[in-house]
Image (cartoon, rainbow, N blue to C red; front, side, top):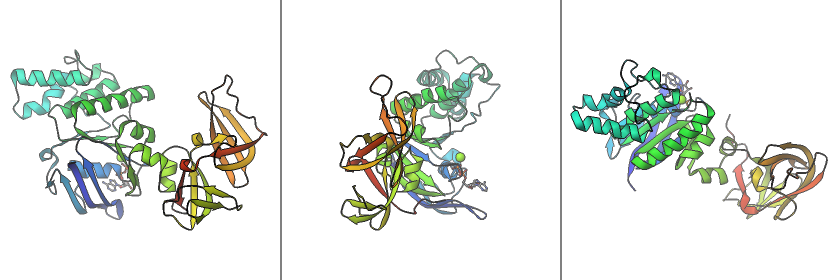
Length: 353
Ligand code: ADP
Ligand code: MG
């Protein structure tokens, strides 16, 4: 595997703010890579350093096997799509897309052919003669994408590119972006605060918190085996129960009951996590807790059931297989159970501010 981008101990300070705090990572060629994290965690700053719009305070960035320290954006084989599309309003769609190629001296049939091909890729065949204001927001976003991809950069950087679109369009564009990335085989580096967006599109996600990378992995790794409470809470819903590792694969909860789990080398105080869809009503699994249903909310595909147990409240997604759902009503006594493999363990007190 060859890496397209490498960051080595990259830090960025703005006066007294540490925006990015000693990040190291490799982005392999042809990947769809996402930086995911809450607002202010340093995603945009990281992307801007890769693009050449900011220089690191410390550390080194490589594109391919070259360091790019001090190299201006236009000399890096990288293009960026911003949330604001920044199209030229007075130019036609065709001329917007052709802009960069023209500056490189591409002309005539070659220019026309490449622009047409790109308009096809982004689904805007036949729109070349229009002006940006004659297109919808989603279509303008596609033009911005075509313009950034037409000269086939090594890497495309995308900073919250779907942020201005409504939910339905955003979902459509997520799948489109993934298709385009796949078809063109260009490395995409995407920044978002939306966990579902990152999980839908990315091969690898770097979860950021306070300028650092909290965990790196595939969407499934991060969801199934989060290593910190922050990651567990940022990617979907999870139940966390406090306990102490009392043996290999065993955690004792505060009321003395024991649960079977992967302890992954953890010792001492931990939180044991289990996702709501992995818990069943009934005693089929090795880990069992009894309690009283506190709330039951029908949400279509599932009913969200909140159960009060002696060690805390747990949320359970009961699949609505039967007509009407069939989930237990508030006040019912229930037993919850789940498999040991459905459990993860995080160090307690690791959740950062
Ligand atoms: P994100 O994109 O994850 O929301 P940013 O990378 O934009 O986060 O910002 C990270 C931190 O750096 C924030 O605290 C932000 O206020 C600060 N920051 C970003 N750019 C500048 C700047 N040009 N000058 C001063 N502080 C900045
Ligand atoms: Mg940002």
